[in-house]
Length: 386
Image (cartoon, rainbow, N blue to C red; front, top):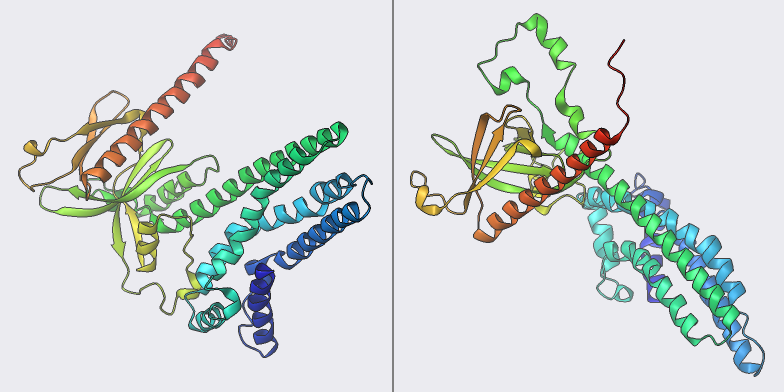
């Protein structure tokens, strides 16, 4: 009942404002998706189920016909409607994050959230509630199964429970894929790849040749749908004459070191409507984006099979009096060192986290690489003759 009131306050208030020509550009579907339909179907399910229980209690001795109701809703509208909502959830949170930067939408949110019926809850808590409810359905079916005495009925409930669990498992995979897609789309905007002649002054390229090199841009490296971001965060890079604020991205196949650059125009200014901050990004990176910053690639990506990680004992670091330092070495295919990065974490704990994350990523990558190599070696060899 509280959820219904909560939903009505937010949706009805927004509809009322739009009927009076306020917040007309706010898309109800993008924000709430099919939440009204989902709520309606859930209420019908609860009502029908309790009516069946009531009839069973009033007519003692009569069999309780709960299976037909459970099958109707869990194999039909209820799970399908939930799937539609859950697949839209990440986009809805992403859209809400954008809207919250606006003063007029902020006033609407504050007015709704201050209503007594909301019980100090906020809109993000309303949006996430159906996801929590979906995960409780197997528990509900399990409790019904425990209380059932008929073997045929128990088998039907068990079969239904397994189907619901599989549906949730499949949905989780789709939601994770969409979440990863949103995250990488944001990273594609945040990470800037300078041209090789801008990154390293040793390389000279005539203007007439630059365009052909630009066409083979390295930005597409983040376009792979299978790539995953394992860990990221701020660190300090020790250079020969200074300490540089950097941001590292550890993917499942390479490490990328970037330096944080800041725009003069802050996020939240006149360009607020043009910039979105993906809620699944790390808080540190979200703050960089909100401050109008971006991450400029400092050096070429370091493949995990070419990365050497070394701990740095504090006694060896005297020039900059660095603490919590570790060293990353980039080797080429001939095992020659082509780059070295001396990095400092803010705390000893953060250093240990970074080192363990890198070690685990390298280990997993090497195992996968060996598996693929073994598979290729086991496959029939092609003829060397033309």
